[in-house]
Image (spheres, rainbow over the protein chains, first blue to last red):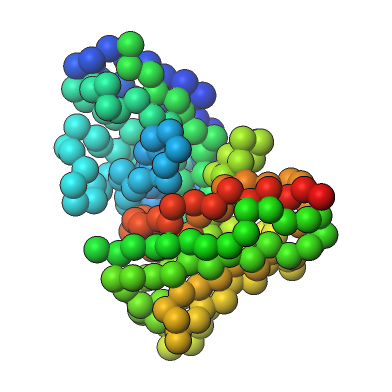
Length: 109
Length: 121
């Protein structure tokens, strides 16, 4: 059981906009920033969004993050087949632990 | 460009010690601007942050509560690397282990290639 809650799956067609939610609590997302990671099969996670809504260099602006209260969201616009991957949210918790969501498997139909 | 290269055995017997090393190129383990983390991933437990070390006038260590008492992260400035030691392992410690660079606030931006460690007799 992960500390942060994500839907196990999401899907969309090419060109569509999809959002993935991440729900936490006042001990993590409610008071600290959220990061998002993309994981392609057989590879290490890749940083996609940090500090709620910042994109590292090289990440397309099709990817965006937002946060409200104890929940956060990742939005992907102009969906591409290459976006098919697992997506994870992460936050820092009062217990000084890094905590993750259980991951959302994105399927491009 | 920062590269993290992991090494270590892929199989450990129950009750023994899991040891992995992460060699750093393109940055310094003593850098005051970053942290060095170990994270693992298994089908049953998902992604799990294990701990980190960072240098800020002195060495600092933070460990996840579930593994506290069993884990040691050790920086090695002479070889520019850091290591993970997890004691008294059980089959539940079977996972892909990753090293990663960064503080959470700026994201874990660079990752090692991952090492599948199986705990089995």
